[in-house]
Image (tube, rainbow, N blue to C red; front, side, top):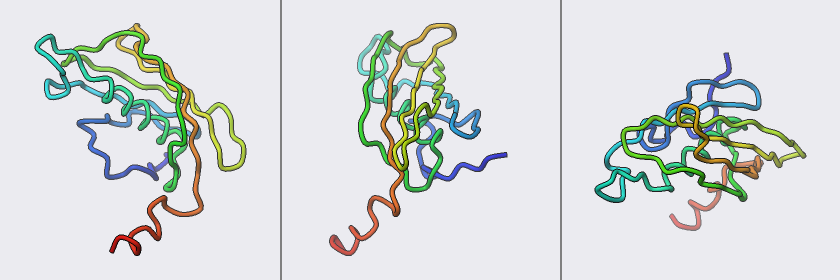
Length: 135
């Protein structure tokens, strides 16, 4: 069994729950809730969907110092509050500290999001040393 090594303090209500993890891949499930909706129709804000995808990519890399460098995202279908969506992430390319992770989010059989996430594994935490400057 693989242990989650990154994003351990994340708010699972906002970004989802890991339901599968293996070397280089993950699945994260998110039950969307009313507070994610932008209007009376229940339309979920895309930021929650992107956040789910980002989290799934980070979990697929699964390193304590992983950060997102860039992404390409396609929002294909809307999501309504109350629906469950599942992100599947797979690390496709590894070049040293750089990994390209493909993420697809599904609602039942419908693909609602696809993206490519460029992740970097840093030697130390991205905020390491910054606290001295701010402190």
